[in-house]
Structure formats: structure tokens, C-alpha cells
Image: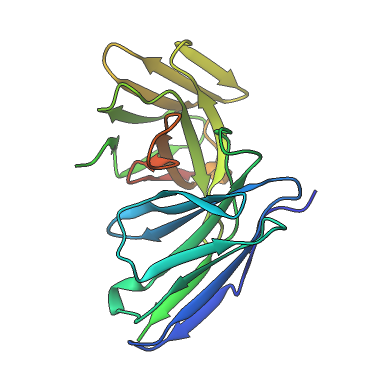
Length: 113
Length: 113
């Protein structure tokens, strides 16, 4: 069974731009979560989607948003990029909303110049 | 407020030695405690996980020890190998929580040959 895939793997943007990252969960998994990983703050939860609905949201500004499609694929969007948004963005999938075990993708490395 | 505190930040162990990483949590509602292993350029991979009704769980060379009264849990890597060199993250979650997973800051383990 294929793992979680994320595209693109690397992105370079400039301040003020917006960016969209994509995640395809493991086949059969319906819950997708997003995390931001930085050297200073570590791994921080952004949001979780299940059945095309945002179920939980972390403590991030409204510039960070996401959505989930009927095939469970998910995208996250960051608008008006800031230098501090440079990070590894990780997507994780789990079988169901109540499922604890999450499987992570390789991440998208975003650099904001 | 950091809900899961992990120590040490870095750890150097000789091949064949025991690596021990500790985590402490505040929220007694947490009911699932996984450990993740992350290699450079990769996403975190689930290593082993425990629930509070068990004091110890062993999988191969990896053991989680859990102390509910002290709100602490630790990862022991027996017979550490150079291939174990990675960053290890403890995490915690609870059903119905606002965050899917709350992570510790990570421990960079180096196993010298």
C-alpha cells in the first residue's frame, strides 16, 4: 500500500505570495492532518480534516487554511507569506477521525525569501 | 505552555549502549502516547505507542516505560546501533482534543560506531 504523498517536495516563494500544498493520504484513510515543523517550535498541529470538514484547528493565523476533497485528498494554503512561514509542512493520515495512529508523508519544504 | 516536555535535546551513545529519552506531560486527559523517529529529509515514522493502562510496552529493541502518577514516559533503545541515529519525538493525544497530536521538541540521537 502506498504511503502518504505530498507535492511539491520543495518550494521557494517570496514574501506576500501565496502557496498551495497538496497531500494524498494512504488509500482508505479518511482523516488528514497538517503540521508545521520548524527548528525553533518543533512540530505544531495546524488542522485536521475528515469527510471534507475541518474538525480541529491549531493556534495559527487565518492565513493558514485548508480543504479536503471527496477522495480524501487535502490541500493547505498559506496566503500573504511571511519569512517565518519557512518550514517543513507535514501531512499525516489516519484511518478515521477517532484513530490515534497517524502516518506521515515526507513533507513539503517551503522557503520564503 | 508546552504540554509535552522532552529531554535531553541531544544524546550521544556508543554502539551497543542503551539510549534513554524522557518525556513529561501536563494534561491528565491524554490517553495515547506515541514515539516517532525521523531521519533527515523524511517525515516522522511511528515507532511504538502506549496507552495509560499499561506501564510498559516492548517491541524489539524499543521499550516504552509509562508512569501515570508521575505523568512521565520514556523510550529505551537497547543495543543502540548507528542506524538508530535520528531525531526522536514523543507525543500525546486525547480523544476529542483540539489538537490531533501534541509533540515534544525532539531528541537528536547519535550512535557512534
